[in-house]
Length: 195
Image (cartoon, rainbow, N blue to C red):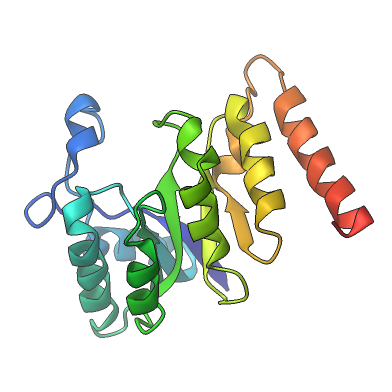
């Protein structure tokens, strides 16, 4: 069994993806039907959709699209990591609704395009802490220079399940793994002292 935990689907006829305008190579449909053919060839039997940073007003529509695709015959889609805006005061209401939506398995807020102060704000951290012991995850989508900030968020919310997207994007080409190693060491130290 192979489980793809990071599938991006793009439906420009149904949703707006403002960031794609500046990335022409990716600015094209990427549908579930097309993916399913390739997944079958590779032996992928299940998958999760990873939000694609749609227009914030369309987060619910993106989740509805995934729910619809999950209902297709022989669908291998098992849920979605939903976009979220933990910096908003309305996040707790959004979370309450999401907890009753069986499609949603967790959340992500793309942070590598944002100022680091966003994830350091009290409202952001307190809202992420609301995920404690819910079974819902939070994906960290950060660049290497943001790993120390991500570690601080993890420390602030010890009962939340975090997932580090793209392994923290280490600088493989130049062999610079220092930020990544520091992040892993900080997490290991936290686990060993149970703090």
